[in-house]
Length: 151
Image (cartoon, rainbow, N blue to C red; front, side, top):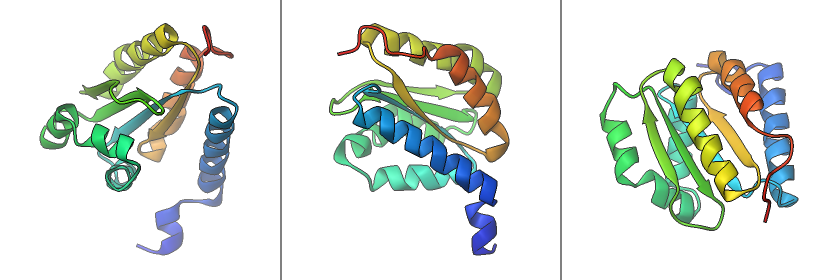
């Protein structure tokens, strides 16, 4: 596979860059104290998981947890969502069987936890490109424009 194909089209790279810039801006402003990594079994998800295993200790601990081990060993779970608060241990790790469950159950549960804790959540859908718009639209429906009970 060529380098350009592996990196995606210009529009895909630009969209990813803009999404990352928005997430980092929210973090810098203290508006998104929480994170949610959404992974699938695509090359994108697998590459992200490999990076997370080499990432900051906080993230490494999350991907070494029992729920992640279950996801990695159980092909019936198409997705996993790793939710937490930057700088804190713990959080939610939710293996999810399919796209419908992800959109209707898992993402609302993650948003419920975010609202309980206050602030916004920086969602990172590290999934197959064909699903990013669908998942992003659902996140946009669930995420408030401003964090409630922000710290």
